[in-house]
Image 1 (tube, rainbow, N blue to C red):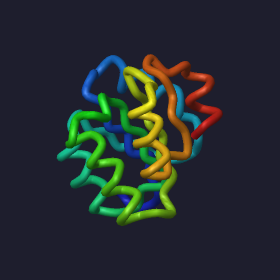
Image 2 (cartoon, one colour; image 1 turned 180 degrees about the vertical axis):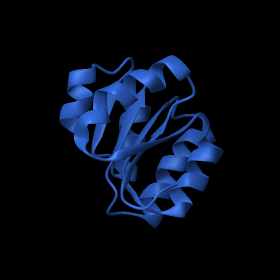
Image 3 (cartoon, helix red, strand yellow; image 1 turned 90 degrees about the vertical axis):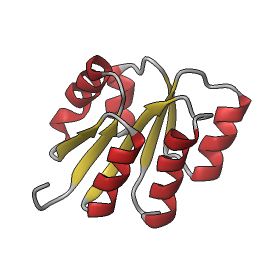
Image 4 (spheres, one colour; image 1 turned 90 degrees about the horizontal axis):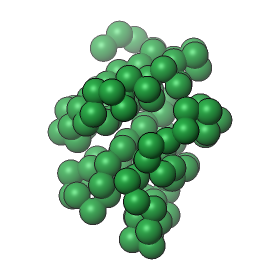
Length: 116
């Protein structure tokens, strides 16, 4: 990873990840990508992350855990959660980990860019 600040996008689906990258690509930050939570955690540990975008089922420990780890280690880094469902449990997780935004999947590109 090069120097500077990055947007970290952690999304399993290549197509969805590509859409998210296109949506936030013009924000002036380089983008780093990961398909799974473990790879995202490694990139997060390298530092230089200005924004974290994670999509997933947040009742899955790895995905919720990545976001929680990010918030605990780097509380100054805002994060956007994109969830398959936005029920009470996911809303509670988002509130507890301090998500800057919770968006339903598929996330509207314009809304995502506005939240970023």
